Amino acid sequence: MLMTSCSANQIILQSQFVPSDASLLFKLQENVTVKAANARPSILNAGTHWMQVGFIDQGNVYKAKDQIVIVNSFNVHEGYIVVNDSVVVGYYLPVENTFIESKPTQINIQKLELSNEY
Amino acid sequence: MNTKLSFLFLTFSIIVLSGCASGPTYNEYASSIPAMTSDSARIYVYRTSTLGTAIQPKIKINGEVVGKAVPQGFFFVDRPAGSCEISASTEVKRSLTLGLEPGDERYVRLEVKMGLFAGHIKPVLVDNAVGKKEITKTKYIGK
Image (cartoon, rainbow over all chains, first blue to last red; front, side, top):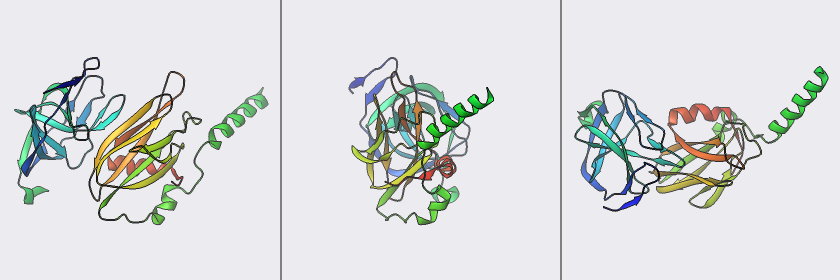
């Protein structure tokens, strides 16, 4: 793993993204606020649906199906969230293929049957 | 005194409004917007704010000029699926990176930010529900 940049306290790491074989769908049970250094907080809304699209060294990568997630700092990047052991640990930026660390935050997601609720 | 104030207000209004979009409103133009092809994605770019009217940089997608940041104006572009960088440059470049999938419809709001010598235009990706609501306050400015 190569540290590519560290402006102020924002930790950005190159990632090796591995896509999931099968996409799993989850529903967020409660609002979650994700905060990376030097960026505005992202609020993940309760009731939104999240597809596990792959994983990186830092954890599983989830993409929202019904909300936009961005890392909003000087520039803006679309992001997926990275969860490790029920804790959001950061964002995965699919265009840049990098990981941005966030303040660790507990998350409560429920696995759904694909044909069931969505 | 009142006459002077009215004159100043009128002059200010003319300066502000003359830099704003003057085409059909989104609602007037919506029925003319063509359907996109199944293998492409559509990006709506709009600016609601009249703040910093004189600041109207070109908007680029992956380095190609696709429009201009006209206050209260919008335009749209269709792009193939893949990675995309939307940028605006004044004294500095501000950018937004996002991924596009076939059939995607994305909304990008152009926000005006303070700069050292000139304002900056910052492209921000917004939820479709927010974008669909905000874009109705703008006018089509063409490509």
